[in-house]
Amino acid sequence: MKILFAVAAATLALSAPAFAAGDAAKGEKSFKKCKACHMVVSPEGETFFKGGKTGPNLYGVVGRVAGSTEGFKYGSGLKGAAEAGFIWTEEALAAYVADPKAWLKDNGYDAKSKMSFKLKKGGDDVAAYLASVAPAPAMEEAATEEEAPAATE
Image (cartoon, rainbow, N blue to C red; front, side, top):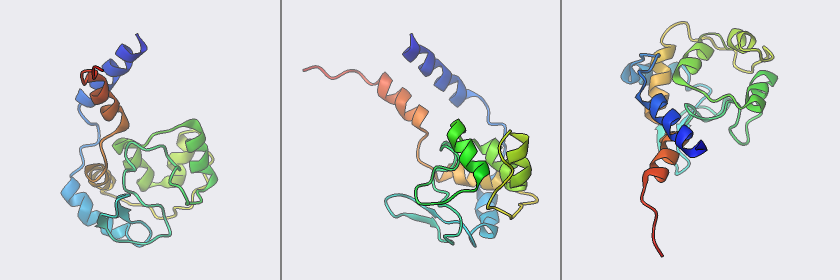
């Protein structure tokens, strides 16, 4: 029953229209403002956007637990989000980049963030761009694995 519920929830989530109506092409251009601190590089080494190392690598950020990039020391706000298991969505990421400290406070986390930059406009586009270069979400992969016929011995 739990598997059926998980598959139904994943299907509903994936079929629902996205709230953030960002434009990935515009977001790629806007990401230039972010590259001073962030890069977008896959684990295999494919570079989508060469950038700084002051902030965490943003490859796969949409669909990932906040504050969970290995080797990066997050502020207490994102550490709290990580402990709570908060998973980034395009909508949440767009709101976060507009004002990181306010977003943390509004969502019940410590308002301490190492990200001081505020993206005044275009956050939904940047979030759409980051989602476009991300791996398939884990929920989508799990649903695909459950739908595949079981191998016989």
